[in-house]
Length: 63
Image 1 (cartoon, rainbow, N blue to C red):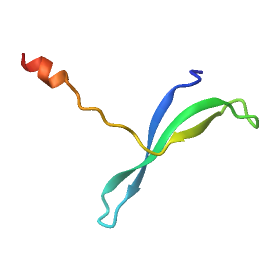
Image 2 (cartoon, rainbow, N blue to C red):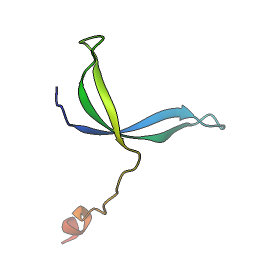
Image 3 (cartoon, one colour):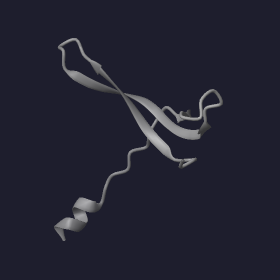
């Protein structure tokens, strides 16, 4: 178990046109094992937003 690992979570749903779409739910962090069942992990939402940083990888590949 990797306690403290953060994950961005998206919910998949079908829109009115029948296409699959994704909705951002939030950023979650493992908080430990579920007290009810040792086979499940418990996650806590730590943020409802994600900061997007512009990548510089494409500029390095062009050089």
